[in-house]
Length: 224
Image (cartoon, rainbow, N blue to C red; front, side, top):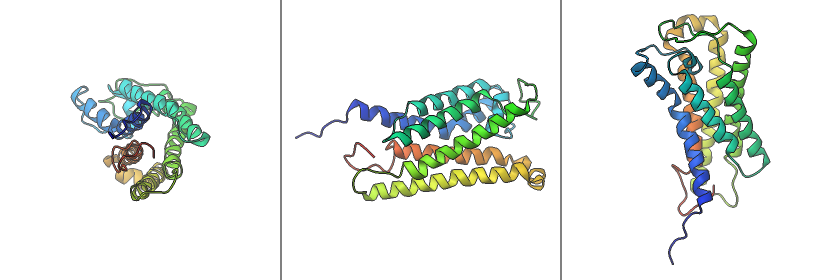
């Protein structure tokens, strides 16, 4: 008897998971490469959000909106999965539409906004909650399973938990850089916030790629 083909529904939600994963991992690279080759600007921005002020600003907003739509469209096993993914999507939209503080990079900036404390605070809170929600999903929700755990599922759970820990650790270190002047003065030239955000996004993307069965899949499995 021939193996039964996966249903279109299974294919669609696995594709959705993988799309979210790839967008998370490659967003910083797209912005960085775009500013170099389109904007002729080689300066790395202070944070990923500061690419809003570069020639890649519309791309930044567009990709975040795509991620938000995919997250809101995602349906997990139960209500808490759906609430978490919906919240993550809402936070992503807030990050996209409430810009961070103006960029200090005059050469790369193509727009300037009036300084608005409440807008910037909203952005920072939403960005933190976005990453915290993603870490929660990876550590607590993706590790759930139906039935006995296979050896692949046990390995996937280790990856999920590692990704959740990496996301939270990255956010905590970013807070240190934001609040300790000595670190800002001596390390700002290396753009630590940008790289830490990329690490967090890479961890987020990796967990979704695993969830989408891009890697570490069970043989002949259709659900996680």
